[in-house]
Amino acid sequence: MPEAPTTDGKDSTSGPLAGPPDRIQAVRWAVGLLAAQAAGLAVLTVLVVYADLVATATTVQGAIGLTIFTALMAALLGVFAWSLHRRRRWARGPAIVVQLLLVPIGWTMVSGGQPAFGIPVIALGLIGAALLLAPATREALDAS
Image (cartoon, rainbow, N blue to C red):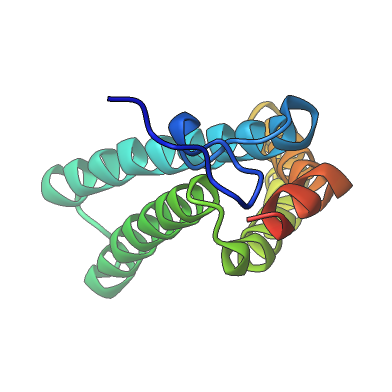
């Protein structure tokens, strides 16, 4: 049985990211990027756990700290992606901060002799921040 149209102008049959396509496209891209970053960090967490188990760490505290940090960041990015997918406005600000923090991390990689890793990290941070700062993203989240 079809759902009755809502009176607030939103199409309730299209899910959380319903609305004019031009307004929600930036949000969809931002959600996809955050979800991809969360998945990448989840894979990195598995690799770090494996390295913790088979390698001899310089310090056990450092190894545990890195493992916990990567796991928490993966979870945090996943929460931001899910929350933005559900049009929760509160997630936009912290997600922007996390994206902008990728720029100095990437710069440290570039200046440390790892430009193959640092440049993509900088690019992902800038793209993610731009998507989240886009006026269409703000409008889509304000319309919810």
